[in-house]
Length: 367
Image 1 (cartoon, rainbow, N blue to C red):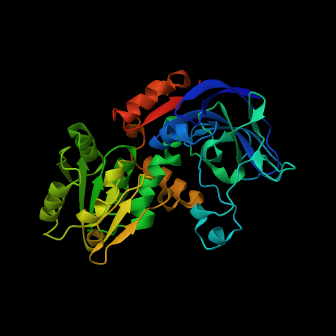
Image 2 (cartoon, rainbow, N blue to C red):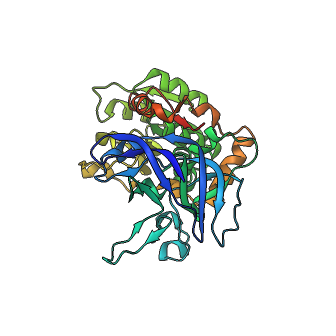
Image 3 (cartoon, rainbow, N blue to C red):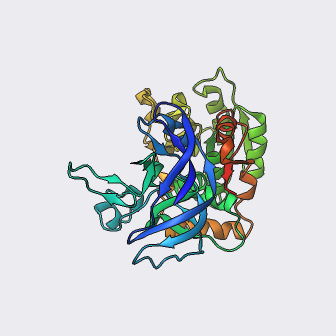
């Protein structure tokens, strides 16, 4: 089947073109995408040194299933997850499916040279990889069955798709990884899509004080809507947020917060949460910074924990229904996170708006 798609060239840009997608094999699902969220990782994927179908947040309708698939059927509404467990490796067996050692794409073939590739998606007559084994910035996604979770009735595709990464990463980092407890204090650096969901997760966990930090007054106003109890406007020249750290201590009885989350994707802020937490507190770098950075080792004193959580510790069959339940009860906002929607033809504009901080979340919609 042919469909439109956004193809990263591996050298910093992308093209809109047509791809050919195969029917599902055993254990696979073909999904017709209806909406796909945009995040900073999609921008980073432009430079991953090979062509690939972009996108890793998506929701749509099952078009077909392969032999042995029972969890969904054609016509079901589903959201995709990018940490696709195999169910049998060391990490999956110990309950850490998000760290699956054997996660693999759909339709894998083993050529005679011994190098496996996914042949289920072709571009210009040759196999092409799909970002995070999903490639949601396309009309069709061919995925393994473990990548799909049903969407409850009443949840719009535009809201469901962002659960697949941004919402899960923020919410899960607060609830699954930090395990924020009632009455504890939290600082969130960066109030974009991921940061707002850290705030929502902390609020639902019963945090007593949630301090939002951002360079933009508008982002801080949004943070208050989503549950922040206090806001601190950072100054651009305060690169390491030393002045912010003093204010955080003032708001937390002179100690620092119990937890501090970095959600900016700004490399020089990767270790800054260590300055904002108390002795014995937890600093979490949530945005997935990959750049080389340095840190003064005394920042870790005393007994501070530094964590780079992956995907909020996602277990899709546990976490996605829980998030949708909160949404249906009006306790967790999804619709309000989506600042703007775009057709695939305006993906470039959507990426520019994201990088400029104009959106909490931008979503591509497929007609």
